[in-house]
Amino acid sequence: IDCIYDDTKPFSEGLASVEKDGKYGFYNITSENAKMVAPCKYLSTRSFSFGLAAVTEDGHKWFYIDYKGNKVCGDYAAVGNFRSDGMAFVKFDGSSNIGYFINPQGEIILICEEHEHKIYNLRRYNGNQK
Image (tube, rainbow, N blue to C red):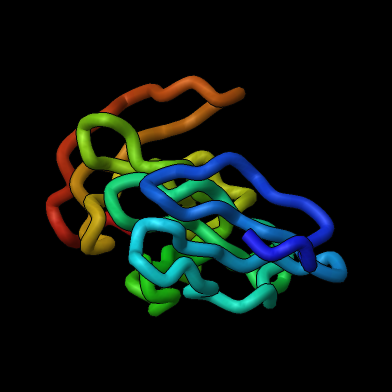
């Protein structure tokens, strides 16, 4: 990685979040020609998992990007990294206690209630509960 960045986060899936002037982007070292794949325009980033990383440009709405920096799904108030089971916890409304587990395509799989970072009343999502 070129020494032009103010900070870097650990590599995950061959990509590292790098900071320049208070904004973050992603640097890819998996290809023969290491390069920036997402410019330093995000206020905050999460690590890549299952090919996606959560990012925010304004600190309020989060979305997931792929290895090329393309938006895959999003506009969430809160996000988590994808877990080993291929699901990530998200919330559409930060003040609500209702949360969702999505798959890497952004489809809602499970719905639950969340209180103090604990999950209650976990159930399958039937398509009309939001």
